[in-house]
Image (cartoon, rainbow, N blue to C red; front, side, top):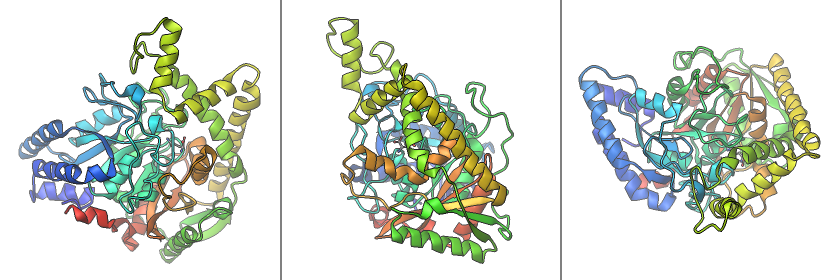
Length: 486
Ligand code: GLN
């Protein structure tokens, strides 16, 4: 069962090849056998999943099944799940049982999907390697010495290892696309505002966006159709109809204009990654697309602007963890200040503290204009670069990451870790959508081709990604690890 894509599983459930209960039990068993080695889950909600599966089977028998009724999924532990621990990868929220469901979770439940549990992640979604989790690092199933990418590393590793057919992630600066690339799966970051952020623990509110991580673009199309849409509880969600993302998947690509940003093929790009990406572009040419070089001249400023804006928003969002309202509280505080400071000192990890300090500094009087205002101005220029490029081309293509997955422990200083995000971060600053699709191997580790479109071009991105997956089979390749638990 685990070798099937979500789309194939949905067809098998429909034809009665197996029940949702059997399917759910199959994945739970794989998690039990394999996840000791990967550490991709923080919580496994087996009992609840089997109960949901039974309901799904009954619904199907009663003729009430939707397309994805009975399909097991996993949720990054950043989505609030009613009565289930929601830790955000942090000691601070290790004792937090969410009292309500995120909108994404509500919509998935309403569609009849089943949650197997909550996946591991970098603490408060800060990181590019999943080494910042309070629950320990996640391993990459392609090579247990390698990181799975971050911050949605648990979701990516679990899907790649066949522990679940698809999972939800969030992406603030690359956290869906980069782990998807590192683990050889397909991951879509939608346009800012396409998916409700209600009930998703906030990192940087003007950048955060949830999206699907699965084996194929077709799988992502099914899932995006469920989770997208306006939500009155998120004032930044956009009131705009949700198209049928599946309907458009087979549109022909003849005449598609592809731009290759020259800044995405410069210094620091691993030659094998570059080769895989250029091969992928050739596949598009054979499908009738035309290719030209374009420039995104402010790319160079994306990382500095992001590392002002994201920590500024994080320092504000994370001020709610004060040891009083919820989350970790220190023992025997001597007074209120001691309660605040010790609860925060004990509850947050090193990277989170670093960002709170940076954010507090850049927002403070005297520095605000020099850093925060300036970064917002730069952000506007970066957005304009993309809008200008989309005047001339339909989509942009390049690598999702400059290198394949690196080894655990390899990036020792924060700046070299931040530089990992060079090809993903500008996309969040501009608010546009992006997808990473498997496009080869470099040194035995997966390479992700990133495809970018203008605001609300998800249907087009999924179509472009799907056509590549009809012409190649990189997305169907599996690490040997997945077969060990067949
Ligand atoms: N790696 C980036 C960061 O650490 C992006 C993380 C994310 O998208 N959540 O902030």
